[in-house]
Length: 187
Image (cartoon, rainbow, N blue to C red; front, side):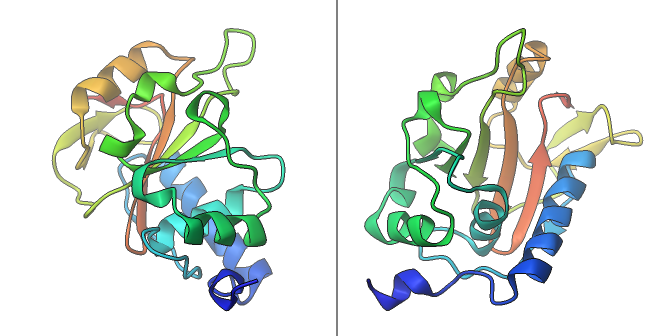
Protein backbone atom coordinates (compact mmCIF):
# COMPACT_ATOMS: atom_id res chain seq x y z
CA UNK A 1 0.00 0.00 0.00
CA UNK A 2 1.27 3.46 -0.85
CA UNK A 3 2.10 5.83 2.02
CA UNK A 4 0.07 8.67 0.48
CA UNK A 5 -3.00 6.47 0.87
CA UNK A 6 -2.34 6.07 4.58
CA UNK A 7 -1.85 9.77 5.29
CA UNK A 8 -4.28 12.66 5.20
CA UNK A 9 -6.92 11.31 7.58
CA UNK A 10 -7.80 12.85 10.92
CA UNK A 11 -4.83 12.83 13.30
CA UNK A 12 -7.19 13.01 16.30
CA UNK A 13 -10.29 11.28 14.89
CA UNK A 14 -12.66 11.64 17.85
CA UNK A 15 -12.10 15.39 18.22
CA UNK A 16 -11.69 16.29 14.55
CA UNK A 17 -14.68 14.27 13.36
CA UNK A 18 -16.83 15.84 16.09
CA UNK A 19 -15.77 19.33 14.95
CA UNK A 20 -16.37 18.44 11.31
CA UNK A 21 -19.78 16.95 12.10
CA UNK A 22 -20.71 20.09 14.03
CA UNK A 23 -19.63 22.24 11.08
CA UNK A 24 -21.72 20.25 8.60
CA UNK A 25 -24.78 20.26 10.88
CA UNK A 26 -24.40 24.01 11.52
CA UNK A 27 -24.21 24.64 7.77
CA UNK A 28 -27.30 22.49 7.12
CA UNK A 29 -29.24 24.14 9.96
CA UNK A 30 -28.33 27.63 8.74
CA UNK A 31 -28.28 27.51 4.93
CA UNK A 32 -25.97 30.03 3.33
CA UNK A 33 -23.59 30.38 6.28
CA UNK A 34 -19.99 29.58 5.51
CA UNK A 35 -18.26 27.31 8.00
CA UNK A 36 -14.56 26.58 8.44
CA UNK A 37 -13.85 22.86 8.57
CA UNK A 38 -10.44 21.30 8.85
CA UNK A 39 -8.50 18.24 9.89
CA UNK A 40 -8.22 16.24 6.69
CA UNK A 41 -5.50 16.40 4.06
CA UNK A 42 -7.00 14.39 1.20
CA UNK A 43 -5.27 13.88 -2.12
CA UNK A 44 -5.87 16.39 -4.89
CA UNK A 45 -8.27 17.33 -6.31
CA UNK A 46 -10.36 16.97 -3.11
CA UNK A 47 -10.48 20.08 -0.95
CA UNK A 48 -9.74 19.80 2.75
CA UNK A 49 -13.39 20.52 3.53
CA UNK A 50 -14.66 17.82 1.14
CA UNK A 51 -12.19 15.34 2.64
CA UNK A 52 -13.35 16.16 6.18
CA UNK A 53 -17.01 15.76 5.18
CA UNK A 54 -16.34 12.36 3.58
CA UNK A 55 -14.31 11.15 6.57
CA UNK A 56 -17.06 12.24 8.93
CA UNK A 57 -20.21 11.11 7.12
CA UNK A 58 -19.17 8.07 5.10
CA UNK A 59 -18.48 4.49 6.11
CA UNK A 60 -18.70 0.96 4.71
CA UNK A 61 -22.45 1.33 4.11
CA UNK A 62 -22.33 4.70 2.36
CA UNK A 63 -22.02 4.44 -1.44
CA UNK A 64 -20.09 7.36 -2.92
CA UNK A 65 -20.00 8.53 -6.53
CA UNK A 66 -16.81 10.29 -7.63
CA UNK A 67 -17.43 12.65 -10.55
CA UNK A 68 -14.97 14.14 -12.99
CA UNK A 69 -11.45 14.78 -11.71
CA UNK A 70 -12.26 13.37 -8.25
CA UNK A 71 -12.60 9.93 -9.84
CA UNK A 72 -8.89 9.20 -9.74
CA UNK A 73 -6.71 6.48 -8.28
CA UNK A 74 -5.39 8.58 -5.38
CA UNK A 75 -8.89 9.56 -4.18
CA UNK A 76 -10.22 6.04 -4.63
CA UNK A 77 -7.40 4.53 -2.54
CA UNK A 78 -7.66 7.26 0.12
CA UNK A 79 -11.42 6.75 0.54
CA UNK A 80 -11.07 2.97 0.61
CA UNK A 81 -8.47 3.11 3.36
CA UNK A 82 -9.98 5.87 5.52
CA UNK A 83 -13.72 5.16 5.15
CA UNK A 84 -14.19 1.77 3.49
CA UNK A 85 -17.06 3.38 1.56
CA UNK A 86 -18.02 1.55 -1.63
CA UNK A 87 -17.95 3.44 -4.90
CA UNK A 88 -21.07 3.48 -7.04
CA UNK A 89 -22.70 5.11 -9.98
CA UNK A 90 -24.82 8.23 -9.56
CA UNK A 91 -28.16 6.40 -9.43
CA UNK A 92 -27.18 4.34 -6.35
CA UNK A 93 -25.05 6.73 -4.32
CA UNK A 94 -25.76 8.41 -1.00
CA UNK A 95 -23.04 11.00 -1.58
CA UNK A 96 -21.48 12.33 -4.76
CA UNK A 97 -18.48 14.62 -4.96
CA UNK A 98 -17.09 16.70 -7.79
CA UNK A 99 -17.27 20.06 -9.54
CA UNK A 100 -20.76 21.21 -10.57
CA UNK A 101 -20.23 20.47 -14.26
CA UNK A 102 -18.80 17.02 -13.52
CA UNK A 103 -21.82 16.08 -11.40
CA UNK A 104 -24.17 16.55 -14.38
CA UNK A 105 -26.72 15.40 -15.15
CA UNK A 106 -28.04 16.10 -11.68
CA UNK A 107 -31.27 14.28 -12.56
CA UNK A 108 -29.40 10.95 -12.33
CA UNK A 109 -29.12 11.04 -8.50
CA UNK A 110 -31.73 9.53 -6.16
CA UNK A 111 -34.22 12.08 -4.81
CA UNK A 112 -35.98 9.74 -2.39
CA UNK A 113 -39.48 8.32 -2.63
CA UNK A 114 -42.75 9.56 -1.14
CA UNK A 115 -42.47 6.81 1.50
CA UNK A 116 -38.75 7.43 2.15
CA UNK A 117 -37.76 10.98 1.16
CA UNK A 118 -34.58 10.57 3.22
CA UNK A 119 -33.23 8.09 0.67
CA UNK A 120 -31.87 10.84 -1.51
CA UNK A 121 -28.32 11.81 -2.36
CA UNK A 122 -26.25 14.62 -0.93
CA UNK A 123 -23.99 16.23 -3.50
CA UNK A 124 -20.67 17.67 -2.33
CA UNK A 125 -19.93 20.36 -4.89
CA UNK A 126 -16.30 21.48 -5.12
CA UNK A 127 -16.21 25.22 -5.87
CA UNK A 128 -13.41 27.64 -6.73
CA UNK A 129 -14.68 29.88 -3.92
CA UNK A 130 -17.61 30.36 -1.57
CA UNK A 131 -19.08 33.80 -1.06
CA UNK A 132 -21.99 35.26 0.85
CA UNK A 133 -23.24 36.89 -2.35
CA UNK A 134 -25.30 35.91 -5.35
CA UNK A 135 -28.56 33.99 -4.91
CA UNK A 136 -30.95 34.97 -2.14
CA UNK A 137 -31.97 32.17 0.23
CA UNK A 138 -35.09 31.94 2.41
CA UNK A 139 -36.59 29.21 4.53
CA UNK A 140 -35.98 27.16 7.66
CA UNK A 141 -32.86 28.21 9.57
CA UNK A 142 -32.64 31.62 7.87
CA UNK A 143 -33.76 34.65 9.91
CA UNK A 144 -34.84 36.79 6.95
CA UNK A 145 -32.58 36.09 3.98
CA UNK A 146 -29.08 34.83 3.32
CA UNK A 147 -26.95 34.98 0.21
CA UNK A 148 -24.71 32.35 -1.32
CA UNK A 149 -22.83 32.02 -4.58
CA UNK A 150 -24.49 29.11 -6.39
CA UNK A 151 -23.54 27.54 -9.71
CA UNK A 152 -27.11 27.28 -11.13
CA UNK A 153 -29.93 29.10 -9.32
CA UNK A 154 -32.64 27.74 -11.62
CA UNK A 155 -31.83 24.14 -10.74
CA UNK A 156 -32.03 24.90 -7.00
CA UNK A 157 -35.44 26.55 -7.47
CA UNK A 158 -36.68 23.42 -9.24
CA UNK A 159 -35.15 21.17 -6.56
CA UNK A 160 -37.10 23.04 -3.84
CA UNK A 161 -40.35 22.64 -5.80
CA UNK A 162 -40.10 18.83 -5.42
CA UNK A 163 -39.93 18.97 -1.61
CA UNK A 164 -40.10 16.67 0.39
CA UNK A 165 -38.19 14.88 -2.36
CA UNK A 166 -35.01 16.37 -3.75
CA UNK A 167 -31.28 16.61 -3.29
CA UNK A 168 -29.26 18.23 -0.52
CA UNK A 169 -26.01 20.07 -1.25
CA UNK A 170 -22.76 20.79 0.53
CA UNK A 171 -20.52 23.31 -1.24
CA UNK A 172 -16.82 23.11 -0.43
CA UNK A 173 -13.83 25.28 -1.21
CA UNK A 174 -10.48 24.89 0.50
CA UNK A 175 -11.29 24.52 4.19
CA UNK A 176 -14.74 26.11 3.95
CA UNK A 177 -18.20 24.71 3.39
CA UNK A 178 -21.78 25.89 3.06
CA UNK A 179 -24.95 23.85 2.69
CA UNK A 180 -28.20 24.09 0.81
CA UNK A 181 -30.84 21.61 1.99
CA UNK A 182 -33.83 20.93 -0.26
CA UNK A 183 -36.05 22.99 2.09
CA UNK A 184 -34.37 26.26 1.07
CA UNK A 185 -36.07 28.65 -1.34
CA UNK A 186 -33.69 30.19 -3.86
CA UNK A 187 -34.28 33.44 -5.77
